[in-house]
Length: 299
Ligand SMILES: C[S@@+](CC[C@H](N)C(=O)[O-])C[C@H]1O[C@@H](n2cnc3c(N)ncnc32)[C@H](O)[C@@H]1O
Image (cartoon, rainbow, N blue to C red; front, side, top):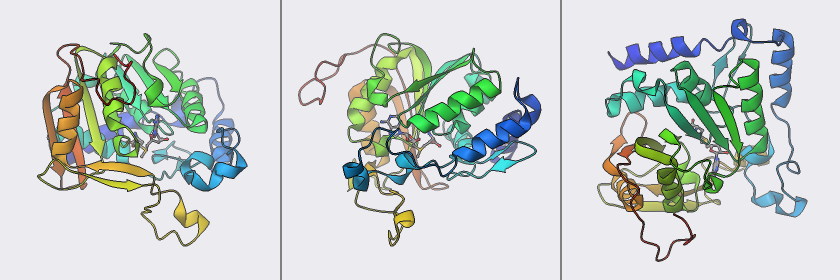
């Protein structure tokens, strides 16, 4: 199957989530509900006090829709376009992963934003999707969408930082961790990867995508919150597009993954997207070196 065939197959399965398949909600209410969220500014309900707003990213305090979605009678443009579909195509092509391998899986969808990937995983036949997101308004939106499409028995929402996914409800629970677009936003990628490792069952795997650097060396570039993608000339422009910490080369990400216990790690630079893509497996619940860990009590 060519990349284009794969993409069109993904578009087709994703198109299931149109107003025709809404359950117990009228299309006009549904449209109204989603549209009125966009642009809402709610710093306080996200837990930020006035005096710390200057340091927060726009994405956290103002509602931005994540992935493009054509609901049939209306559509929403996302900040990430069709990235949820393109990413899935990339993972499958780069690591020879069949789309069927998502069927009947228990999957942790990390950093789900407004749920494009969560719905896609459902459309691919996942048995269970746990959608994790630290921004409350996005997690609530994914909850609303899953209820609107009658997916309550398949999807559950974890409204928390991924660093909190450490209790027994997440220990060795998942067949697959789907982890694109997040690792470079984290101040502690090694700890995060270890938490993901612990959340997998033996034999489970992880799919990671990240902004990165195209180097053969095991290097990371540190940006930090004051480096912006845009010129930052207006408040809107700033948009906290910075908010990136460590951008790894493929080899740096591979080493981090091996450090926390993953095996059969493959990590590559994808010149189509100019991003790093990685795959790894968990074959045993092996220990981790605790010296220097930011949370020495971690399993
Ligand atoms: C760039 S978006 C990626 C969305 C989607 N995973 C994708 O790849 O298209 C990053 C998402 O991760 C969320 N996020 C960032 N840090 C997080 C953390 N520590 N815990 C949970 N979610 C986080 C952000 O709020 C945002 O929704």
